[in-house]
Length: 163
Image (cartoon, rainbow, N blue to C red; front, side, top):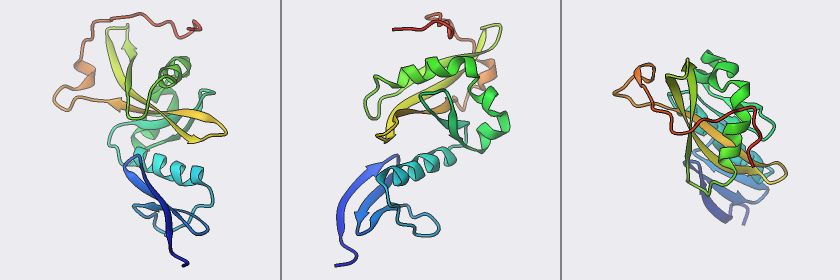
């Protein structure tokens, strides 16, 4: 049976089917591609997750690299979307997270009074590299983020190595 399905599971709003010769992804990519590795199918869905968001979003690796980001993040620029000084602290927040759990991190904009709130999830795309952080800017539609004044609940020094 050439088209039999061996396994089926959901991942980031999509579905991965284990079929003969690899993995298919639903919703289909435009070429109906069969991915040879499960990690490649997961990577496709993770990048698709970013692309579907209207707010800046990307995938942050354990070495502080933004390996993928969507158009709104590209318009900001990688160093504005997630400034390098905050990347390690943001990534460390994803490590203890279980599937579907989220954490939030505030990136100061001006003098620490205003901040952009980032929502973080930790997922494993490729077991060879461990978790990555899915990061998206969390915005409240009724309140422009530039006008939000947040009371700090903790001071995080991005240059300090937290245990």
